[in-house]
Image (cartoon, rainbow, N blue to C red; front, side):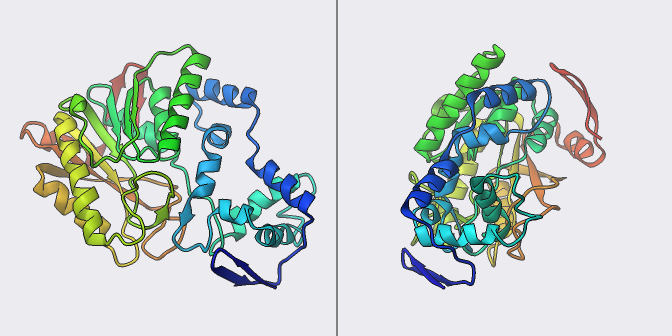
Length: 355
């Protein structure tokens, strides 16, 4: 069966004809939000120390994730859901293996599984960042309780900041996303009776915010990997026609320069990034950070992060982050020792032993 949609095509043996009614009903089910009671329970559980945020993600940003096309896919999930033949392809996949797609699941749940397990090259949802990793970073590198997330992502880093009662400053050009994250923050704080400062701007991190100068203790994010993902909303750092050189000059370097201005003395700049195809994002980011005043402290290991690695594989369970410090030549050696050997540090939420 040859399926054509939006100028792309696939030839597949997996296909089932859907009626117009089946097509509309299934689309509606796939876009359906979880019950708000489940979201509120997850808020309370996270405030109590857990890290599971699937209902939160699906409630606030699932439809925006559906808009995003990962570079190796022909379509975004949104585009696939707008094409009856493509949706019929994924429905047919769910009928082949009862162990993977048991009858206990609804058809929508089965199709979501099919996107996750069998959508590579066709349409898949972008990965979210693990709250557990953000918890670790914000516990260990948090000199003044002010955290800047220079690429807001899908809300996991915001959720961790709320969980740990750390002031959150964020920028993202996806104006639909930033509105959703503001609502997430309001709903979380109303649910758990909390009043943490959240300041999210609908703009790229390359644009300077004067109010944040010399205010931030730690800047940590996982920014766009050049053209790895096309988010389709807002003035993104990459769109068709932008070269890698232009991306570095107009997005990456101005972002790092702004972070240097935002950070307090001995504040941390922490970057989760990986090499992609033939692009040396790690080496280039390190060079740019160092020539703009940052001192490289070392690598901090992150585990179980679903992002693209240099072999074009989706899961990279050995990804690293780079840790830099704003150089005032006072605490650099101690920071290197702490990064290498680990340490115990008392925070407002108790005694934390990370190693």
